[in-house]
Image 1 (cartoon, rainbow, N blue to C red):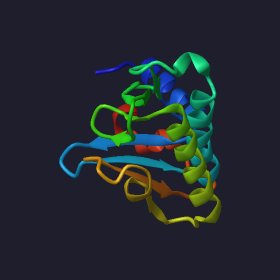
Image 2 (tube, rainbow, N blue to C red; image 1 turned 90 degrees about the vertical axis):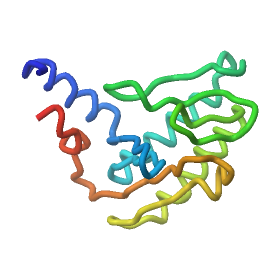
Image 3 (cartoon, rainbow, N blue to C red; image 1 turned 60 degrees about the vertical axis):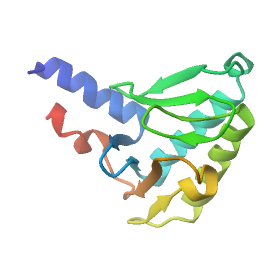
Length: 145
């Protein structure tokens, strides 16, 4: 059982990230939940990754969030699976733009499904759930309360 100090650090990391995520291997889905501003931070993380030339080699990757299992990676093709959300740097830039475009038009309560537009042959869905402006991503992590 984590200490309250560890739980508080985890809550702080969710808030710094700006969104909550979890992977469901039964439904084969990555769920990313946040306010529009928080979800834009995901788009920004993808864009920053895609602009870094050191990320060019295949299998380069970056982990996000307090548990570090949401992974952005460089691969030869677009993929969303239980391992990561990956593609070429150009692909990841495209995913960033797709997320930003969809979020800019989204309303609270919308669920945005991105697999069909980004990587239709992938085994996992990338689902963005749009919460209200006051959403605290730490509240979605029941393990740190």
